[in-house]
Length: 341
Image (cartoon, rainbow, N blue to C red; front, side):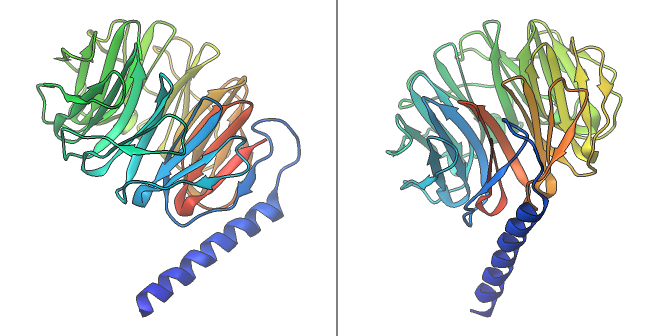
């Protein structure tokens, strides 16, 4: 009982510090990305957020699901699971969330959620949508696919390595993971392990301007035009890169050591001055603006990926960010939700 009381007290203090930090250091200005508002935080960590069909959906620990039409008013939905939800995406009129023990949840409206039969008990770390197909990836080389989010099939991946991230571009699904693992598929059914020139963990992969870009440990960067042939690029950092995105003709990668890298073509990368020393965990692009989030509530914004400004937010770690309907939404520890404008 003492342990529970102590935990509750510490949690309350953390939430109060966040509120105080925001109220005393709110930055001036207006518009998406400039000023951020702390919405009423909950208690469970939030691990991902997606936007679709006019709705934001955030998911997290203990099966937590929160939804909002405007980013301001959030509703906790009844979740059919208490397992940790790690990732969420939207496609074909459906939200799909995945997580621990192979859990798969779907909802057409964000309010009514159904647990779908999963062919695996392995943790699912990421889920993506492309070309009419959902693809979920995770531990022990797990790849699941579904055309409708209801019926899921486990595919032969020819690997037992942990798969971390998936994307779709130019008619090809690309999945990356630990030890340089790269898999590709034209249809989500037949998967091929591709040769990787670097045997390290790759956290994130994206597609833009005809190029796939994967980033990961020790600042490693790989690029490919077709998903089959991969080239290691000279990286100006040795810090781990956590996330990469593409927008307005520019790739932006962020990571540990407050690292921010940019590239027009995925080949030549430049380190940008960062106004923080905190780790950055995720980056998104929307409405002509890049937004990076990370440790200690860090929020950085940039119109071009070159010049970055730190915004006031609060002290809780932020793990994910997305953009929709004129609003950025960032989520993180202790149920923290920050929105702009």
